[in-house]
Image 1: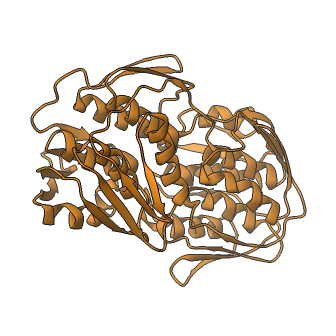
Image 2: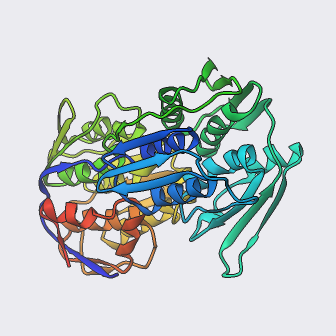
Image 3: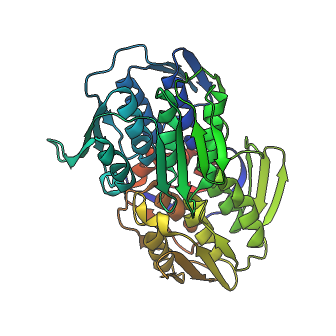
Amino acid sequence: MQITFSPARAAGTLTAPPSKSEAHRRLLCAGLSGSETRLTGYMYSQDTDATIRCLRALGARISTDGDAVTVAGRKDRPALLPVYDCGESGSTLRFFVPIALALTHGGVFRMHGRLGQRPMEVYRQLFVPRGVLWRMGEGADGTAELTITGGIENGQYVLPGDVSSQFVSGLLFALPLLPGASTITVKPPLESVSYIRMTVQALRESGITVEETGEAAWRIPGGQCYQAMSGPLHGDWSQAAVALCMGAIGGDVRVIGLDPDSLQGDRAVVQHLRALGAGVETSGGSVRVYAGALRGAVLDMQDTPDIAPMLALVCQLAEGESRLTHCSRLRLKESDRLGTTAAILNALGGNARVEDGDTLVIRGVKRLRGGVVLPDLKDHRMVMLASAAALAADGPVTVPDAEALDKSWPSYLDAYRSLGGKAE
């Protein structure tokens, strides 16, 4: 679906969509319980739908009614070797691999898009020496498939910290289901620690004991049972950051429905925008960002990779030089977001380059040019970046793959237009 975004000014109030990261975790905890859970404020996306499909493969019964989703945990007997269709969701894949080994002695994991190219070596090195059979191949339709058979036992698990935190979260979900206690130790440096904290919070709220024994170490008693924990899903700071950055580049945007005490790492967008000179006001669950005298800054993206492309846009319109550091994980997403972000900014008349493999160096310009048709990247974050860049451009910006937005925010275009954005 081709969409053309035209120059405009973003202004108004937006209610933050529900957190996709929280939804994955709360759905999983609900599906692993033995009773019924009702989550409100739910929003369909391709990623969370992948988690729902995999929970159904485990035997959970799930229904939706408007913005509510009801999960009856593991009522049906799963197939002998279930098929887990993970779509393009890295969270779903990495969360479910150890869960499947704990509950169904493995399974077949189907992966679409670039998901089959994303790193899984951490799990292979952990589980194969413990007797798990591991085969990466292709299905009949050419889709990447990972087949694993075997089980996991309680014990000591040591992981590298310079990879996705999703591997740690996957173990945290699975190990409480085993008969004995286990430990997890992560070697420094630890990436995206906020996402691990979100997992631990979801587990504890679902009756699971997780003992923190060090800065990056946990003890998980075995033989535990997940308990239903109904309630609302909170606003997504990652998606809110998209709108707030629109306010910073010449607009005036307020986002409501955010938890100021959230464990979501992308809450750091507030301090990053302040560092760049944007006007920022916070009050309870409301954040307002408006145009200010933008200036270059050095921002660390180690714990907030998802918001790096939007912050790069703000940096591109700031005076002087900016540096976004620790961006290596951006290369392992739906596209190589590090290189692609620089390419999009440069195509629009910006000045961005990748330095030392994981740093994005941006030299500010006063205005972006338009009249650009971007390549088909199949990446929802890059579509959002293009739409926001068009606001501050001299001409339209066209993307051929706007359907990629369904991965995380299907109603994004409605939200964009509600703030004054022009999309045709």
